[in-house]
Image (cartoon, rainbow over all chains, first blue to last red; front, side, top):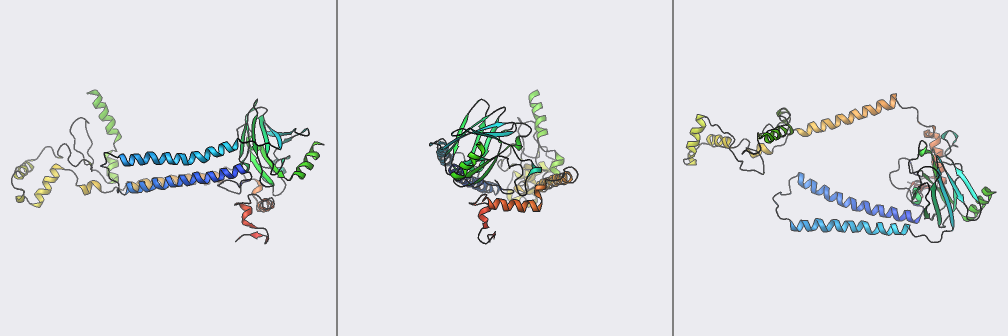
Length: 227
Length: 171
């Protein structure tokens, strides 16, 4: 989850998110370079150090065509690399389904057992001391850590979106459509997210909580819940 | 003809009114009556305007123009200045000097910022209800403890700033 008044990304807990954080740093560096150049030229102009009697400007025209092309290539290449990386699905260990309803999520683990449950937000008045307001749920999505997970997202009524920022996952839940995405958690922990597509009155009150635990804990949890 | 009259009306309205000009301290720009006729302008990039500034010369000025036709060394400094003022309205120094517009702009900006602040304070005091109980100091410290226990953001975030051995924040 995010810290109080946090401005940047949450720490990555999946390899894709790590890549995205690095790319974001790279893109911001490019943006800083461009903004510094613009600020420098602006100060030159305001201090009247740039002359205005240029009629033929072949050299500078060449520079301000080539340089933006280079900048665009510098941004496009890593971006496309990550985009294709996101589409790599290498043999998930587990497939789970997330179905969005108004206003809760339901999850189905039907690989080995017939396990399905609903996940409602814990109302603020019923929160135990120290728990996170508008983020806690009654039943978390438990997954084994460091295993590729495939998740199929859909919705029952209106558009929703299943998002967990620290995993770098955001997938729209569309009624009548199955959207697939996958992720691997690099560390155990509890990762929070919120519904990311406006879906009615309680759109802000249907969070997602992913709990990543070692395989043995996952197995005992799933047998407990499905019994 | 009608089109140029309409255009000059629009042109007049788009230029700052003379009252506004005097408030900022630059009452020197001559407004063009009709954009197709030769005009006088005070512009850095037009050093030789199409017409002289003073069109109708007084008798004294006409005499001076006659004297100009002779050798210029015979002219006094005052006469030279008078001839300049017939030809041009402002000197380059007068043309280029800054205005006090920035004070008005800054004042306006600060005023509206202050006004927004007053509105926000009024809203907080008179309009909004109490904040959720999860902002109490007891809850926030329990919450922070829980975040550290579950190792939230351990790489560069909050858990990376806690010293787990010494049980205190890292220095």
